[in-house]
Image (tube, rainbow, N blue to C red; front, side, top):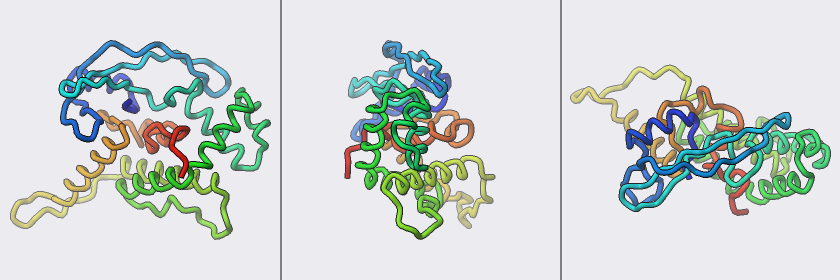
Length: 236
C-alpha cells in the first residue's frame, strides 16, 4: 500500500514509472496494474464517497501496491477525518457514545478506535517524532503545558506536531544555500532531502507533486505521518 495525497498525480507518476517499490530490499519501480476494487467510505456529515484506487505492479519483485488516497484509511469504511474527529471529541472530554453519535459512527466502532490509538500511543508518538525530526523541529510534538497528560492527549499532540513540522517544511521559503566553497553544491540540503525521501518511502507515502503539507493538511496529513496505520499500529 502507498498513501498518495493527489490520486491524479499518483496516477501520472505510476504511468511514468516514477514510483519506487516501498519494499525495503527492492529497487524496482511500479507500473500500472488493474485498479483495486471500488469502495465506499463515509465522510464527515454522513455523506458517502466512492473511490477506486489505482494499483501498481513492481517490475522487479512483482508485488502489487494499492495507491490509497490520503483521505482513506486501509480497510475502514470511514474517512480519516471521521475517525480523527471522533478521537478529538473524546480527547476533549466528550463521552465516546456522544462523539460516535455526532459523527454517525457506531459506539462500538468509536470505542475500538479510541482503544487502538491509546494502546499504540508509544509507537505512534515515536513515529511522529521521527517524521517531525526529518522535516525540521520535533519540539512541536510535545504539549506546551506541564500537567500530566492522558495517553490519547499525548499521542494526538505528537501527531499534530509532526503534521505541523511537515507543513512548515513544505511551505517555508527555500533557505539560501550554504554551498561548498569548491563545488558550489549545498550538500547538507541534498542530504536532508534524501533523508526525507527515505522517510517517505519507509512510511509508504508517495508525494510526486508535493501536495502533502500544502494542499493536503489536517487529518489526511496525519494519515501520511502514520503511513496509514493510525488505527492499525500494534500497541506498544
